[in-house]
Image (tube, rainbow, N blue to C red):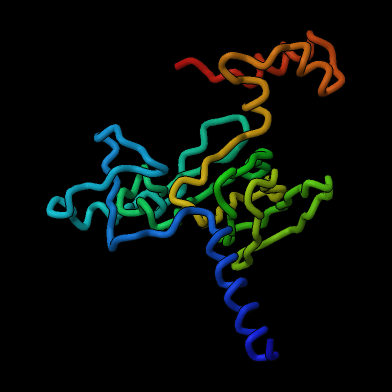
Length: 220
């Protein structure tokens, strides 16, 4: 095989692999506006009848101002995924805004279906993710800077400053999913057995119960 043909084959495989490992499957039509009310889900939502599609299916104004923070962590995520913008169905992307109080934390979590990139709107944050080799990759980022969290890896953002901070966050999935590590382990339904958590974290059962009490959703 000539060097030219070898390069062509290599280029083709690189091209194919880039599609094979993309987060969401590629679209096969111009539009497939989500229709959750249909009850049909085949790796996504059923499509709305095209005659009923309007500009409202592609619009969301919920990121224009800071979200209201009323939790002990001091942060709030405002998502604009396919559940908020039906027109994102099959397009393989979504967007969020995260706001932090001074000292606020977006706790360790993962997005099982997407890589995330954040752009700092205001303030300064300490951010990081942990590889499967148990290595922490971390950095302080400020207004105008970006940082990437690879798909599926545990990551966090912490505002160690004395002023509020905010970021815009983009994902290569219409519905990236969020699995908060502490909440998943200590507030699941049905619950993870106490003896499993106690042994995993090398703590006693009483401390497991204490953590569950602190993390339990507040009743309105």
